[in-house]
Length: 109
Image (cartoon, rainbow, N blue to C red):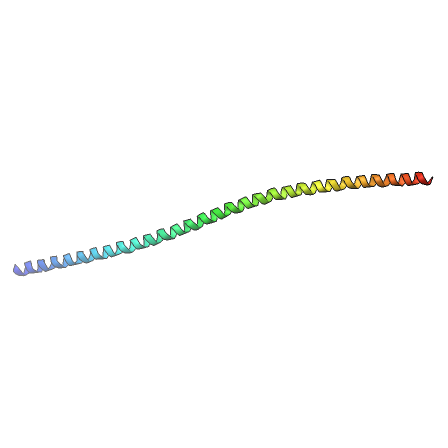
């Protein structure tokens, strides 16, 4: 009976040591998992910051593109007006030339 009691005590002590070891391993695993989660959070935050910067840059480029489109439309309008002015000037010059030829012919006659 004493041997059985000693054996039971030894088994209980071994079970306590195994349980303590299991708790230490569990705590170490929790620490490792916590560190991994923290690293993932930091990486996710960096990705979010990069995404925000890219979004901001895209908005800025969109604004620049819109401003360039407005400027291009204004330049097209000015070019059309200049072309129209050139056509009017050509018509006036042709009319003056015709008058000059008529006056020259009239003076010669």
